[in-house]
Length: 499
Figure 1 (tube, one colour):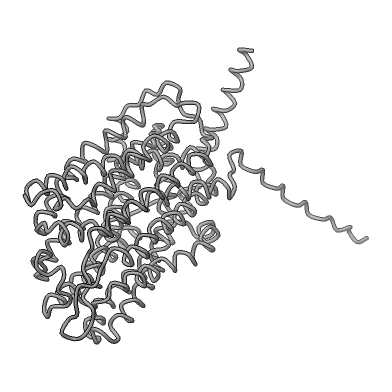
Figure 2 (figure 1 turned 90 degrees about the vertical axis):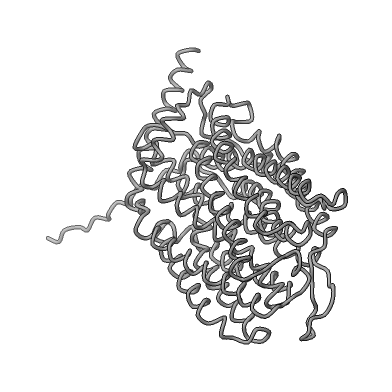
């Protein structure tokens, strides 16, 4: 007698995560990073041009300014981390209130950085002091809003898919906020001052245009910060009376291989992003076409726009570490080829086209890192809690933010010194001269060799140093889920017994 075939039971549908979030909240978080990047990108990309070409400060003095400001950050960033960690949550949360209270001050500080102090005095010492005060004030206030904003992602949701969603939308926001000044600023901050010997227009930085654009970016930042505050919610409860052992938290980070490698990668990645701002000198004093800055921005950001559509599925299938490794490999190879090929091309003919092609390939590889970067940091926070039982989002973000600033400082300080000592550039006398033989080639050398080295180091670090592969994160996620469920059950039981 033939046996009757039995239909296999369908697997039970996976229950939705209790802290699942949707597109709306992702969009809200996106607006916050756009607000961040409106002012940060403008300051990071164009302030050094303002200092050297408008205020006429020597490159060595500007390099020292950036270095000293980072020494202060060694105190400022952990201080902000402790303030945020120990602050009692309000009705609107622990981290969201900073978006409302610091939005206006940080935007004003960014605007003041672009005030042409030459209009008030010709004393270079006073001008330099003014630059120190305004730049350090901006850095302090930016840290004061960026640490809570970064920490906010970890309390909006603890769902891994939600974390990837937030990181993806943060990357979109960063792309919008970062691209806006890079695309639009060259149209407003440069003016034509003459014609070079080869017939091309010579353009120089315009003080009034730079200040006006700073005001526009400051206003946009305020609007976007407040929109982020109004559209996000903290779902993961914070302690009502936090007693944070900051010493234990910081020592735990130093002993954590995931955090150390993530921080080192942050130094390199952030440093390279900042070093790319030297391309403004390349466009102005080698290619003699400042509008190439617009094309370069598109070449860098377009791959990220494309990859955002596929990143959540790719992360779910392959993992963040794995994607970052292969992505930085492509960027490293493209950077090495850029260094070898671009200097051999015609300066005003094929070289700009070849340069932009390589920027696109580099942007494609880096998109894996930029889109998943903040989800990786959230993973590191979860791993710290998994291994030590300690959870201190603001402390991790404070140290990680400081590491990124170290990278930016190394790029600014080292880049300006390379620009001066290797290329021979002097903004006080060459800011309005366009292409100069030897100097232009030196700028091209600096702007191609350093990226090739940095992306190679990032690839090695992410591929062989960072240990949290997709399989190693699964028990971490499970532990955090179980811990949150137990905490919620205990809270519910306590409320029931009280009533």
